[in-house]
Length: 345
View (cartoon, rainbow, N blue to C red):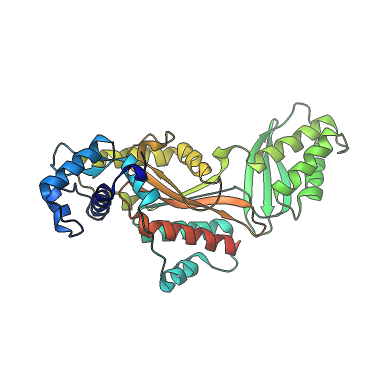
């Protein structure tokens, strides 16, 4: 279904219903549409149009009301073809910039503030995903904990400290951990893992590393852990869950939010969903049941990737809330916040 298949009258009534629903959260009836003044049709004629829109899957009729609400397909059609997003005011831009920026703080602190800020401004939950390690490394060390386990400690140039547990190969001599750390420090210092991993992998493949077999296994394990190749190792921050229960219209909404909280606690599906937002540029919008990664059918995600100074994708920031969130206001807000974070990087 696309807008070209609707005549002008149907498009006008459809737009009015969706805009009114997003504003009030309530089903919209034909008399409400007739009072909006954008059409000279009688309520009876409007009801006929609404019935046609329901037949093609753009509207739904809740059993408790004679009014209509947009389906997830209808919301997608509206967002893609009829939504008019306003620009942020200079005051709103300055507010976002001031809340995100602070000298001498780590990326994680910036993202924490940005997520909390987005949550407050949107009245939704703010979410952000970033690599576990982003800044260039300063130092790597291996600390043996027991016979078969060691802690990899990495300190970045911005002061962040990352710890990862690795398994040690059997028969590893005491000097091997120091040798592995010296090897990594000579190649990782001043570089991000993305910049150094290929160099190290090439040396290990071509046997130019001059490491014995057991020490090489320690190096490979340390790089694999710290590089965070598993998406589950991404840093995921969620703030403002309480905003999602401020405006519940029915007991079904309460159950939906409870399920959403469960999803947010699990985080894995949300990480996968945000990872999809990395593809391409600009704001991505996921509405309700159209994305199978979400077990819920009653939530929307608005997210935008952000990049560093080298124009490399770093992470994703956005908000999650009910499908009737204020798309026109939140889309430019998320977009600008992602750009501010990119400028800070």
